[in-house]
Amino acid sequence: MSLKGRMTLVVSALVAMVAPVAMALDEVEVSVSADYYSKYVWRGQELFDGSVFQPGVGLAKGNWSVGFWGSMQMESDSAGDNSGEFTEVDYSIDYTDTVPGAEMLSYSIGGILYDFPNTAFVSTFEVYAGLAWDTLLSPSLTVYQDVKSDGTYISLAAGHTLELTEEVAVDLGASLGWGSDKYSEAYWSSYTTSSALNDLAFSASLPLAIGDVSVVPAVGYVLIMDSDIDDGLTAAGADSDFFYAGVSLSMSF
Image (tube, rainbow, N blue to C red; front, side, top):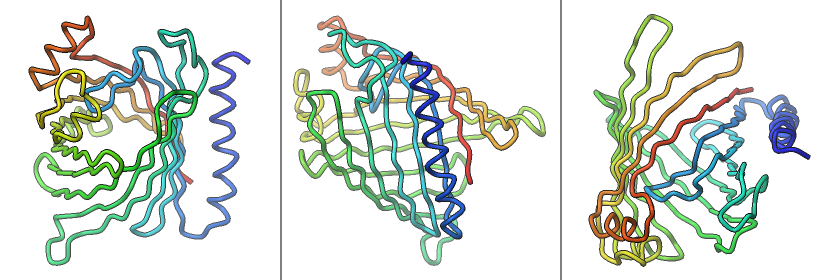
């Protein structure tokens, strides 16, 4: 089966699975997403330098939500493998609510299980806690703790919606990540094992509605902040900053 055929099959299967669930479970919101990006960059790491297809399913009721997400490589990697195969599948659970007595503040706690089929990587699990402030630039702070490596990653993010017309707006976002020494040891051991500012990311997206489907073209730029990591990547002939583009499709039931 061609890659296009596999993508169509995955999306069709997701819709077929979640539509009955949405009808059967009262007051449960079910969402389906299908994203296509020119490359896969995560926390400053270029996990795949090629196009990826990333479908997901989410279920939410009240303050609780669970999610299932995967990343499929649309091209072969450097070893000539994994084209059309999932190389990451994540399972997440989240609880989000407002802070009592401070309605502009909300908090989130949860966990994420990362699994890596068709690769040599072993699965890992993170717990996290975050705060978001409903004010100018919508600042948020999230702390992730890896249970296996004991590494800590902290993300400070902000965003702003720029209204172009009454019906068209651009969502702008930025985030800054910091990793502890254990985090650097787990992900950047070839270049540093010290705690350091990890990555700086910028994004811009244009949400559009086509019927019940949300279509969101997006672009992003990510660069490494730590000089040791940057120098190490450069010396190894690897990039330390990345540009990507893609489109996200989603709908809710």
